[in-house]
Length: 316
Image (cartoon, rainbow, N blue to C red; front, side, top):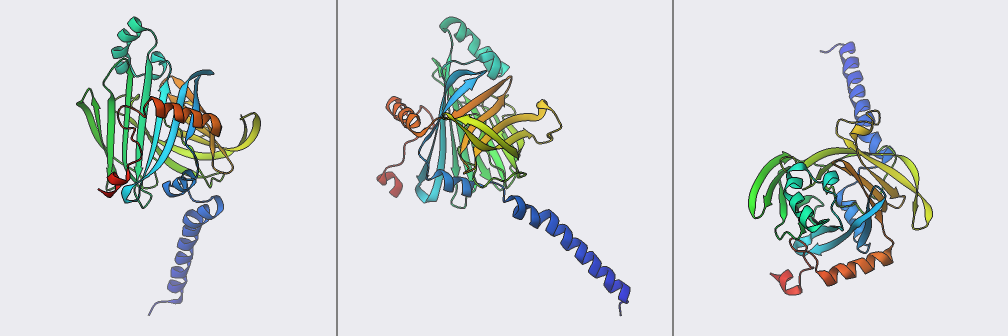
């Protein structure tokens, strides 16, 4: 038969374990809310029209971005973006291996234009299923493409250039991760609270081809006013840093910032890409509608940009 002190010790250990569980696992979500997930983001995005952005580099207008969302057959959801560079600053945002290929064209034809497309497919349970990304340069015909599929919490990626496979890799993907293209602005982050943290794996075909994925940590660091559409707006500031970085690590760890209106609408976004900081400023609805109509007239893209499937296709 156990002694009274043994029973007291067991009870104390149990209380300590429950206290740790409450403080570490239960209280944080109650105090600052759950981290953003695809389910809440998709719910917010489904009610918004196509979103357009003005893209800037060092204060100068560089191009535009357009983000849309579609419901596909089998309860899949497709998030798409198109980004157009009116001029391509080779020395600032293009890696050395790609800049070496493009410099002869720039010398003979003047400033190059570049387009990027990206697609993310979310399954009926709100989980990432597939990604695809492509970039191409005028007047080059071929694109550099990346395609990835998620299997058992691992992302399997293949990169092709000119139709030839140049690299493939397989990396673990955190279950709570919000995967994103570094050149595709995030349009909605609902339910944010100061102090929230989550993981943000980002990919870019403008990164070195053998390491296009970077794991970032996101944190809502506070409130900050931003001037948008002619007026000052209160926003929550979300900061992206290298996974091992912190607020005390200095600018070297800083990878991006988002200014999110209190209703979850992202108004402005900055992302560091090689030697430059790209800034995306959200356009009001009417300029966004005009841009979408123009993109529709000119063609929705050469590689992965797809129109909504017809009724006949949906039945197949």
